[in-house]
Length: 124
Image (cartoon, rainbow, N blue to C red):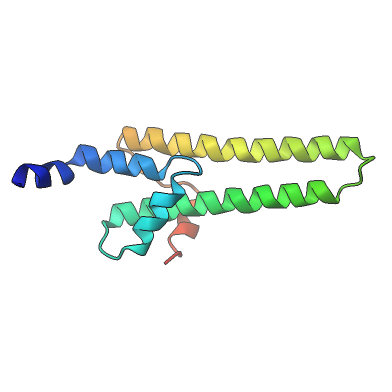
């Protein structure tokens, strides 16, 4: 039974679980689950807050871009193209930021993301 506890408490498994929080879109589910548990590690909670903050910013930004795209006149093709371009750059930035954080986790570096880390600290 002690072997199972050693495996569950291993640093390798710990980092693997932290990688799961950073998976774009799908990583929000385990991150929210960790935030609802009160007995979780401080590092896991901080990374979960950051993941949820990034995910919510992406969801709200995408909804805003799509709402503004729907509000643009059908004859304004140029404006529609620009809004679609901005939406794709915004979504790509979310995925690149998540990948960048995964690389930093792999290298055992700080997982602070300028702007978002300070906002994430204020989440419960």
